[in-house]
Image (tube, rainbow, N blue to C red; front, side, top):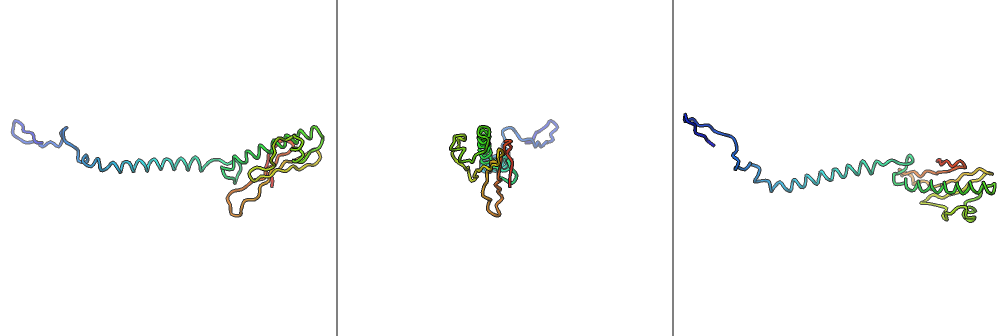
Length: 162
């Protein structure tokens, strides 16, 4: 754009007039695919970050166990406490402890199974003292997963045993 002034000198203006288009505007339609691809990459990176930090880093209930074992171990602990409560009631009423089969047959214990997801339950008695133990077969060699053996005693304390 050239302006003519009264003293007849010319001035060149580098300002873009309002009706003029920018240089990149003819390529705007060609960049649409790249914009969509960039948005998909950002979205997938956010999803991966959420998966990695929230699902892979879940806390475990016992050291050396997978986070997916938490539900199973909670159920095993609950079963152990139910068996121990039934054993405690049996010791209070009969003065001696009973086996797991005797507790189930006398209806002191309402559960009918003596195992849960690979854990088998047993009761060890010595006079009025007892231990209810949940044992699991060892994990295959080289496996990062560990199956803890749990026990509860007459004090209703759940702990890990060897």
